[in-house]
Image (cartoon, one colour):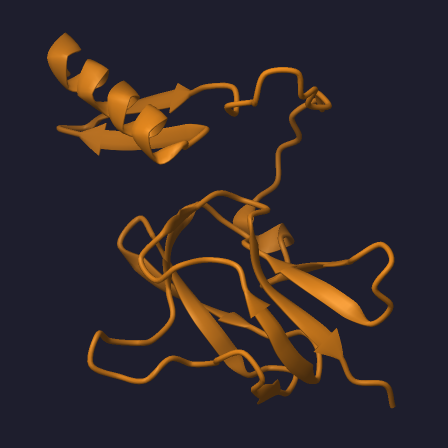
Length: 151
């Protein structure tokens, strides 16, 4: 792989605010990583990296929001491109205000040319869509906020 191509990939990572990028070309694989960008005066906690296989990551990694009982954040289980619909001319899987049920497809993330359907782990109402269509997302990036239904 040529140095000029590596520099282009590094610039692309900076432009898109990516923290990691892996490229395979002619049997060789290149992995680029960088620290997340931080605003001046803002500190970021440093965590030790952990290895997780894609099979061990749940389809959506929800987290409860502090101060908002019943509000769940659905996070990206992988790095990839976020899609709101199965195709450009189709309607989005979900919109703000839609009710979803456990197992409903709420988006697609394309990673390494594979289309991965992301499903809801909860019954509830979509309160926020935190990502734009065709936006690149990192592992753990918040995709949706769902107000969980109480039984």
